[in-house]
Length: 183
Image (cartoon, rainbow, N blue to C red; front, side, top):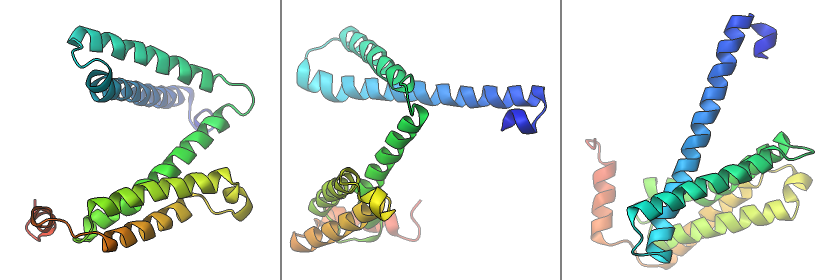
């Protein structure tokens, strides 16, 4: 589109900006995945006494492995870019179905509790995945986030109502955060 509607110089700048944004996003995602793995999984569960040098090495190896996996996916024959877009679409659908209702309920419902949040996240993901894997998206035309979100919402509300209310400290934090003069 840039080549069609803009002169060569502006087209070059636009394409360079797009490539720069893509590279910036990709390297950020690789670094986040690497540091999350080393800090949250490798050191606490696999090597509790790992040195900083060792975790740095493991992080770099993970960046290399993830880069190779991304290269293989991007270089795949056939649908190629469409396959990647489908994976991204499904990931965002699962993310929205899992966390959407939980985030909204935690922002607007003082009674919402941990058990309801866990039930909402798990049920939203399971419904989203089930809807996708059974082919319901294709047969109904309804994207899997919709039933996943509403299933998550219902499960979170029911479990919250059936379990104990949050403690006074949690309610105080909620009220402080939702007060008119909160910064």
